[in-house]
Length: 457
View 1 (cartoon, rainbow, N blue to C red):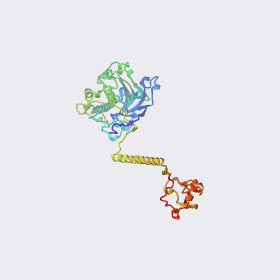
View 2 (view 1 turned 90 degrees about the horizontal axis):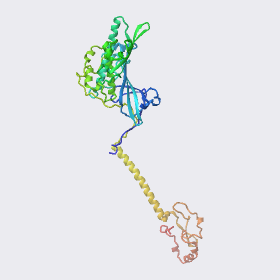
View 3 (view 1 turned 30 degrees about the horizontal axis):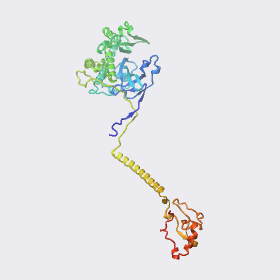
View 4 (view 1 turned 135 degrees about the horizontal axis):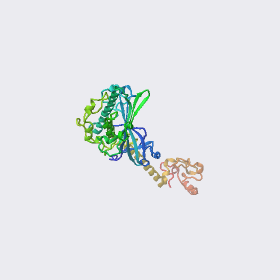
């Protein structure tokens, strides 16, 4: 009961910009790109120099008000390793940019986080061909973290579908004698023209894009929205789908971006989002309904962890919980010693205390006795035996000696002034001398030194 209310004390951790982070959901790994105070504006904007800090002082603060700002998908065929090419001829790197608030005793801080997802990264091993790679996710649990389980499944499935679609499109182009796309970029951002809460609608995002077509001999053609018409029309996903604009990967890439959007919000613990597909069973059922068809049209990069639809596979309830960054702290943790060790420690302490008390007690008694009885300063054995002097008088040989051991020299007590160890004054000698002549020799024997009381008042 003594230590039950004692809690560990931890100091705040300093997380530098550029550090890799993950949350208590143990799913995605982020890069901390900016830290700033919201009162100074957005990170990197004008007038924000004073608000930007190089480190985040963090002490288990809950991530609040998380939003996904935009998602870009970088598609490439060239400059990939041979092993990556064996999995699929095109690769896709999905970058998701999010912002969260952290409320601390020093005020509110905003942090920018970047997630990079590449299902077939450069370091992939050829030994994992035709297997679920599990890239980008630290752990998975279909029962306790069902939303993240389905988020990973949708992301990997539509990553494989998008890259395979690019491969088929290039094959058709080159088959007709036209140059194919070597690289491309799609930039998905929220539709500012209208408020859309239904994430299944194609108008949820707008998309800007650039595709590079290598015409040969150093000639590069760039495909952009203005290539086909107005920027407003050809950044609208519904318009691109309706016109089947080249390259027609818009539906697959749009769902991949939505899956990244929802998975990041779930991992960051944003529980109040109405646009998160992973918190709504109807949305998850919608985006997984064609898994079996997609699985038949992919290359060697096998997605997962689930290859079946939400309706066909049983899992735990959808949802998420508030998130915190997982990091290391320096803590002072009280620990209870074993009972035997405590008993020995207390016993030793008590013995030391008793010894000290006994020493003080005996010292006080000795001091009191010496001060209250002056005779205690003298002892019977401190003086030598009396000896016979001329004229029949007795004197203490060796002079006087006190308890300190310092002897009074004999010169201090001459024979004519000392009698019986200095017990009688010199002025009484004449009277006493006359009386001594009448004593017999037997009466003048040495007194028993034990019976003498020398030094008594």
